[in-house]
Image 1 (cartoon, rainbow, N blue to C red):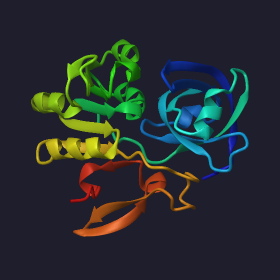
Image 2 (image 1 turned 135 degrees about the vertical axis):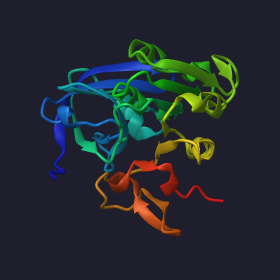
Image 3 (image 1 turned 90 degrees about the vertical axis):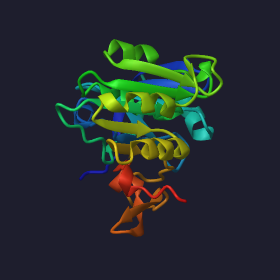
Length: 251
């Protein structure tokens, strides 16, 4: 595989919520290769390490990337102007494995919600459950509605949608689904995996810091289970999507 950085043109840089931005970037060669659940590594001007960003959506010529400003690198990304060139490694990682004929429930928390848009569009009559801390951080609801998803919104403080956690809604929907795909913070993924265990299959996309994105730096190593033994695997190469049974959540 060629890991050379490729130029993309920034077609749109749009603010979705406080500190959350949506990019649309164009590269007619690499965009068609993207699969749901994969990610890109963005080369940030004047910074050594690239920033990993999940692919929110894709067309034959563009990728949509939604990211949250968490440090200097992502702040610089948020200030790039439309029309500029950005350099990406893309697409990277192992994405969601979706089977035709199955009904999926997609469960996302916070900035883990964006990659589920692309994934849900690949399935029929999906259920989508999104969770945020409060109404100021809610994103992509209209995008999911327009895609035809059966959408549920939860917030930790009750300022929008259902007052509670994504797992509260998930428990109610288990009887009408075949599989779950989830992305979000590790405590949420652990809770989702617990709800699904012994009932429906579950895939989880891990949010880990990645330095290189190609398995060279070992920054993104996580604990996984195999034959009752704990192993360290690299999220950027083996993941970011795993079967929930593979992941060692601790405890």
